[in-house]
Amino acid sequence: MGLALLAGLLVPGAARAADESTYSIGVLGGVGGSFDVDPGNSYNNSSFQLNLAMVTEPRTQVALRLGRINLDKQAFFGSLHSADLTYATVGGEYRFKESYYDSGVYVGLGAYRLRGSDSADRSKEQTSVGLAVGITGEIPITPWLGVLLELSGHYVDLKEAKIFGMGHGGLTVHF
Image (cartoon, rainbow, N blue to C red; front, side, top):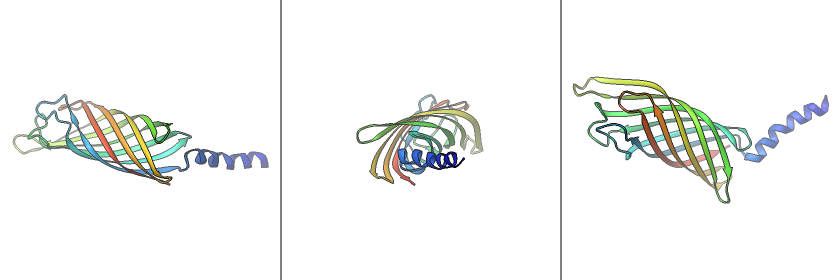
């Protein structure tokens, strides 16, 4: 009984030692957009993203990504102007240890909301679930701080556009 209790107490420490931290918060800026909309098929719309992640197994984590793309680089995004896409995705990520950085792949499910105004300046909104896939690369600066780069693709069943792509970069803090 005492041996089982001691083993149970040591397992979280061993998992934590492998990844050195349990939680991370990342703040990223970048660009994004959609190529399957006309007009408005631009990938240089400004965007930002907040990543909240928790290690579940060594080299494996679950992450919540919250973000927004301002789809206003061109006058219209489909039939909308002054459009933006907000999203929240949750998914699993597997990380690979490289010589001077960590790389990762992730897949997640998300909730997406496209908002904008139509040609009569009436507010329009579309919401849908979607799928997100991406790759990440993190260059550690210190054991608790790193530079995170991320490329992602999103499939969302919206009227205006269905495929979105994003590129983000920023800092992530581990604790």
